[in-house]
Structure formats: structure tokens, C-alpha cells
Length: 464
Ligand code: ADP
Image (cartoon, rainbow, N blue to C red; front, side, top):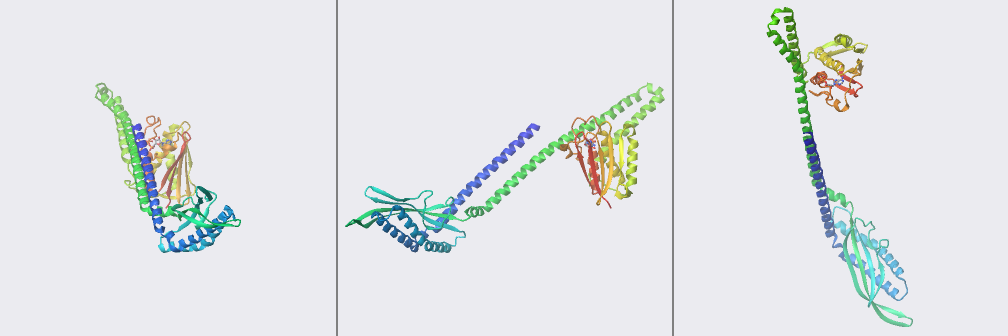
């Protein structure tokens, strides 16, 4: 049965984990799709800007400049590096205007998000017949920005790749010789776009999906948690009930067996001749009857919950009440060689309690200290007034209770399962009843204990 539950819980946890992984995968996929759609939407929105006349004409100015520099290069007046340097200077001088135009156009689109843009040169090549001369090729550390803003390209998107190809005629001077020459020019360019905070914009667009997913996830997790918890609880209750039935059966067996024997004796012929034996047997019947009655009373009274207990409170003086209680208890345990220490708060305090129920509640703890005590039992009953609470602590040096069991110690029918169930008689109702009585007095009860080092039960009740 335990194995079955463990398997069930493991399978359920695995199912929940798989569900979470699938959900995370689907959300990630949706994010990727939405991100792509969003970038495409931005791309479409700005796709026409590059072709507007004002920007085109700036590019024309730049390309004309390029061709003139290339003519100088062909006439060996400047080096390739000088060409690139001059191109950069020209691009920079046009950039401010380009940026202003571009921004105006983007603003007019009213996109609702910030967008950055740049155009850069990928390569500049010149062809003369079969001969190719590379003027510039963009590399990782060697970029030639034409127009636009400077930004990190990791998250940027290439929105356009364009190519300029034309034939250029120029005057070739070779000493005194002046001839007309030509070359084919190829310029490859790339336009890039970067949307500011694109991640959060996409996530914002997915907000309802994210919220529903989180809600469903939390709902399924809590449902799962609740089901497992009730399964464990049910199992615990079933085990506790079985324990209770075993305990009560055990408790009933002895008096019933004794009654059976006594009845047999009373039926026998010999008893009629011995009035003394007859009286003795009757006493046995009476004692066992009382024991049975007490057992039933214990079950009936001690299993009442706080809401079912009707209190009849009276005003008492703490000193008198506790001193009497301790004296009575000492008398009852006289034969057990138990040391009972009285450490009751000295200035008198007035308390309002139901003496009958409260005494039974305290006696349950005191009885337990004896029942679960070891050799040389020492019980200390201490009371103090702390702020507005009257604090009663009952400590013993007995078997103690493990931390794991302390959680359930005040539960109905709970008994520590380690070996002593049948060694020490009990139904697991005493501490439950005590806790219910403390509750009806608007107080609290707690336990501090370590196995084999004893236990301290602390009750706090508010004073008048
Ligand atoms: P019962 O004594 O009838 O079993 P209780 O409700 O009084 O029921 O106590 C519940 C369980 O708590 C006991 O079975 C026992 O295992 C444990 N217990 C209670 N008091 C003590 C104590 N002072 N020292 C060690 N164990 C205790």
C-alpha cells in the first residue's frame, strides 16, 4: 500500500514536471513566433523609408564621391585605405541629415516603440575585364557604416541587402597620355534594424497567454498538492483508526476476559458454599464493570471537540488551585517513587477557568509524564505570569517525542508508534482533549521535546 502511494506520487510528480516542460516549450515557441511576427511587422512598416527621395539623394551624393575617389585611386593618386578613409568622412558629413530624415519618417509612422536603423557597406569591388580589385570588405573588426545610428548588432535584424552596380568612365593620365578608361563598380550594402526593448514588448503582447498559463499551472499544482495531501491524510487517518481499534480492543479484552471468568465462577456450585469467595468475585465484577465504564467515558468525553465542550468557568486563585492539584496528583502517584516539583508563581493571580475540564486536561499531561517516564521520573510543574498570559509548563525527563511525531501529538487518536503502543495503555485521546480544552479557554499549547530527554508541555491562557 505504501509502495503504491509512493509510485502514485512519483508518477504524478513526473506528469506534472512533463506538463511544465511542455508548457515552457510551447510558451517559448509562441514567444519566438510572436517575436518574428513583431520584427516582420516593424520591417514592413519601415520598408519604404529607405527608398524615399531625400535619403536616396544622399546616397547618390556619397556614391558619386566614391566614384571620384576611385578614379583618383586608379590614377594612383591615393591608396585604397585613403579611399575608405575619405568615404567614411563623407558618410559622416551626410549622416546627420540622413538620421534626421529617417527619424522624422519613423516618427510619422507612429509605431509606439523605439526603432534604430543603420546602413552599412559590406563590400566595394571594382572589375576590369577579368581582374577584380577589392577596395573594401567588411569584417568583424572592420565595419564601414554608411548612415544611421551606432548600435550593437547582436540583437539587430538585417532588413535589406542591396547592391549597386554600374560602369564608371574616368580620365586616365599616364604621364603625358590622357585616355578615357572605365571600370565596373559593385557596392554591396546591408540595412539593419534594432527595436528597443523588443523582448518586453513581445512579452507584453503575450501577457494574457502568460497569465492564463501561470494560472493553470498554479491551479494544477495546487490541485495536485491538495490531492496528494488528502491521500496522505486519508492514509494516516486509516492507520490511526486501525491503531485506535487495536488499542480499544486491547483495553476491552482484559476486563471482558476477567468478567467471563468471574461469571463462570459465580455459576459454579462451589461458590455457593463460600460467601467470602462470592463477595470477592462480586468485587471483581464490580471493578471490571467500573473499568469498562471509565473506558467508555474516556472515549465519550475525551473525543469531544472544542466546539462541543460547554464550559462552566469560575474564578480561582492560581496558587490554591495548582497547589491542590499537585498535592492530589502526588497522593495518586505515591507508590511510583516519582519526584514532583512545585514551582508555582508566587504573587497570587486570579484565573477564570472551568476547573473540572482544566484539571482533567492538566492531569492528562501529568499522567502521560508518569506513563511515558523512565526510571527516576521527575516532573516539574511551573507557572509564571508573562505579560497578559498565564504560562503553565509541565516538564518530565521521560521517553520524549521525536520532532516528526510532535506535529501530530495533539491529533485525535494519535499515539507514537514506536513500540510502546501496547506496553503503555492509551487511546490517543488525552492530548487531543487537553488541546481542545486549552482552545476553549482561548489559550495555546505547545511541546518541546527530544527523544529520551523528556518533554515540556507549555500552556498559555490569557488572564482576566
Ligand atoms: P495516550 O497516552 O492515551 O496514548 P495521549 O493523547 O495522551 O494518548 O498521548 C499521545 C501520545 O503521545 C502517546 O501515545 C505517547 O506516545 C505520546 N506522549 C504523550 N505524552 C508524552 C510524554 N510526556 N513523554 C513521551 N511521550 C508522550
